[in-house]
Length: 506
Image (cartoon, rainbow, N blue to C red; front, top):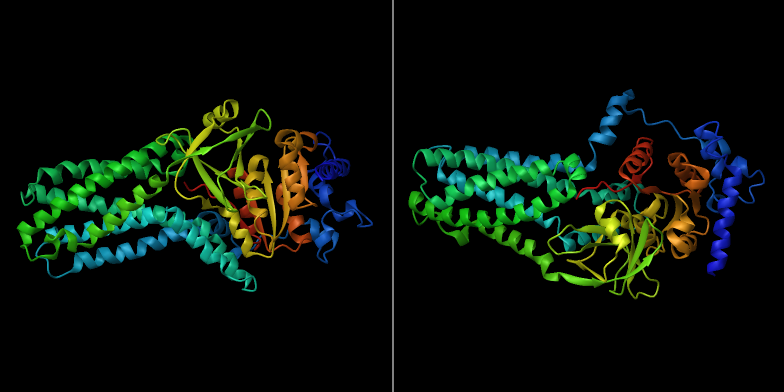
């Protein structure tokens, strides 16, 4: 069976190499990309790899991208709609609305003689606790998996528009960043009011004074370092700051809650709700937050590994822990070190799985050169972007390099969804080995596999569109680097085609 797959794959690459001009002699990018899978390449249509599920489109319709949507006939507005006003940012903006309403209510209550009074401080501390709690909960493994599984319950007979909207569930990170930013803004206001209380000598607790300024400094430090560009270039710094800074904030906020309640007892009387710590909503919200910060670490364990070297740039790590389909593992050399996420490829017999590590940084290069016998993992494996592919009848997947790992981990576990694969990589058979190469052909015997060393870099936007049209797919998925993923998703969505890809929200 393996030899059959190999010969089939080599034949397909040779066939595609013959029909596509070389990168050095290409006359235009259009001619290069279309020759790979164009109907014009196969006049009798007998060998066309796309025609097993081909739609009744002419060669011209199949090969040409439609015009982008003329969103109010303004290119600027179209760009704003599909690149700036993403689902992630829309969720972020929606989070601001209840926080603004809460601020209006807090400042308008009549029971206060002054807008800087202690009851207002108690209300703001409650708002801070609620936002912190939501920011932490939406990052919990079991909550993420539950949200995705709820979306999977939508039947395939549901309207495509509904399934397309729900498939954007992977942009839930907008809720985390929205509530986190609101926490910072609320605490900034909280600090300003506390300073007035300090100056008026109405609050004299050294514990409140000593915890206020470090929390404010840490809050703004976390907010600034979470900016995408900083996170991209200094991810390790970002990760350590958020872990240690977040833990310190949680501890200091406990100090503030306890002593602020004691302060309320002196200012508003022992009968005041704020004077009783256990009757405050902020207390219980912080209990929930603290428990969920600890929860993933309760499942800290060693994941024993058997390394399979694929090439000098890639390694496949096998493990025996039972794993489900479409999940992502986080692994680390040290529990308090840097953590890295990898999509799992489950074994067919259910006895463990594996993931592919590609050379992309210091940690991955060290792992490839000298893999360990075990790595640490924590929490429950979470589902990834590609798992929403099961919400569609047919999908077209485009991936490059080691992105084939997440694709295999998903496609092998969703038999009800027909998947077409476009995989572009330098020397895929030599680089990733027979196991990965044959697995791709097993899940999609008509997979379009491009060796970029032989054929150059094709126009993947054009190619995946042709596969999308020919196979009558309902959606396109892209798993590649940041630049290509954004390009593919934008080019498709701006033409009204459902497209999905990772957004790198950590």
